[in-house]
Length: 294
DNA sequence: AAATCGTGGTC
DNA sequence: TGACCAAGATT
Image (cartoon, rainbow, N blue to C red; front, side, top):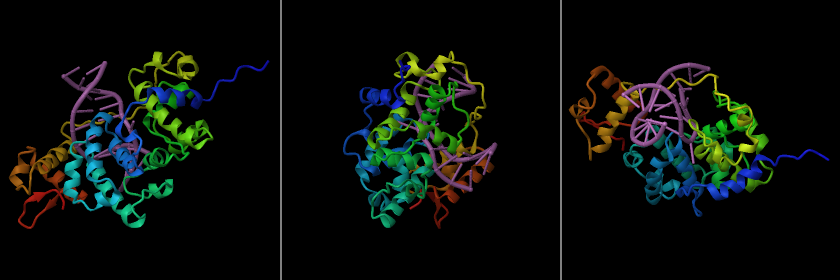
């Protein structure tokens, strides 16, 4: 008698997802590929809970790429609000303009075409293809990398990203069927986000616990290299945030004194203001005042 | 290829 | 309380 064969990961994850998936607005029926793309931009390094209300408002205001492209950058940055990394908002705006003019206002379904858009890297391109169009392609984000590291490789956590190898790992797990592959991809991410979490994984509730290489190995703690935690207090990132917050909160242009109040250290303040101008996140008017870009 | 880029919640 | 973390991309 042949030994029992464990069902492929997808066999247990896809049914689990059908029951356990969170009801997120961009997962609801009728969400367009554009809606998926907007959600993916917003979710880059930003938690779901903070994205939800902004996404809903965004899609109501700008339901198509051309609608967003027609909006002034100042409106876009205000709508982005405090999601963080506001350059994402500018890149999404640029990507929308490209889609409107080059792709007939239709979000590309092809991974390479997607990756050519500003702000779209390997993860986002594949996420849009898979979740927006149901394509069969490996989707690798931090959650998926952690799930693979544990369930497949038996490691406590994923090391530094290795794009090619990580993609190959996930390719090997991807079901042949197109629709099932897309569901498998989102299910892997959902598992990493809600069960196989970074800090305190809820292994007792894990649908894959019987087959998890990490649990089988006794849940060894990760001892590999970690990326250094990012400092924030006192960094340029904080100062830029403060300055931009002043511009966002004002109804019109502000004078330099208003920005001076946002941060005490003049040298750092000036350097950061200059970097905001360079990034196109702020503009200086002829009268010397500052504002969000037109 | 390591550093940079916001913001806020959690344990 | 402060380190760590959250659907990355870019240079």
